[in-house]
Image 1 (cartoon, rainbow, N blue to C red):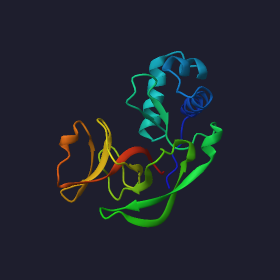
Image 2: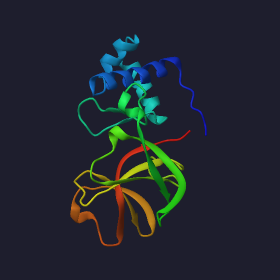
Image 3: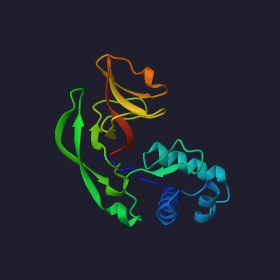
Length: 182
C-alpha cells in the first residue's frame, strides 16, 4: 500500500474540512477554509482541494452548495468510528473475496443491500484496486451512477433516462462512494 504524503497546508485543509463537517453536518465553503487555515487566496484553497481530490481524500458531489465530501472515515465525527464490515466482490461474475471493507455505519443506506466491489483494472476515473461502494436497489433514479456489465465489460453509466438501460446490460448496482487504497 502506497503512502501519500501531504504537505502541511494540504493536511491542514483536509483536517479543517473534516472538523468543520463533523461539527456542522455540512462541509465548509472555500472562503471559510481559507480563513480557517490562514490562507489569503481562495485560489490557493482550490489548488489544495484539487490535490486532495486527485489523491482520493475528498470528492466533489453533484450538489450545487458546498460540494466537498470526505472520503473514508472522518475521525472527527464520533459516529463514524463505528464501522460495518462489507464483503468485497470482484470480477464480472461478482466473485466474493476473503476480504472485507470497513464502512462507516453512519453512512449506510437504509433498506438496501450494500457491498464493496474491488476493481481489477482502471475504469473511467477509478484506478485498479479502488473499492467501489455499491448499493443494490429495486429501482434507480435519474442521475444515479450505475456499475453495470455491458457487452461482457464492466462500465459505469450515469442514468439519464430509465429507458436508456437496454436488455444486454446487467446492473450490478448504484455507485454511492469509493475509496482509494494507497
